[in-house]
Figure 1: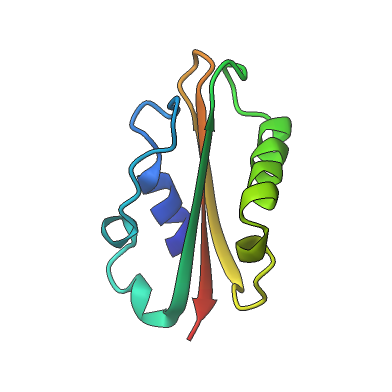
Figure 2: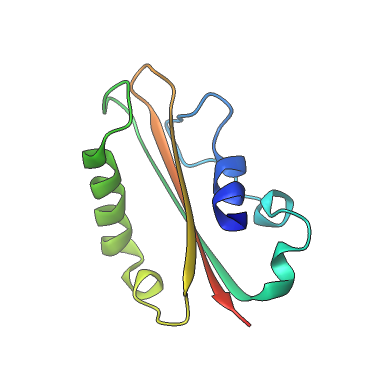
Length: 104
């Protein structure tokens, strides 16, 4: 729950953006959540002109983008928990944030 909460906090206020949002993970993590984690990774992606509402296909595309650009992070066996959030602005812009964590 803490990593999903952090992912939601990192989404743009309107839900979508033409570019990935500014990512301040330290500010987004709930108080005390960092203590149980040994490592954290953060991935974000955005699209425009990709429909007004979030879909499963959007999630698949964001994962495919991360698999192409950050495969080493996605496949790292140290990460044993995750948080995910996706937002849409209703006008075709969407943003996804994935927070990966490794237990201490």
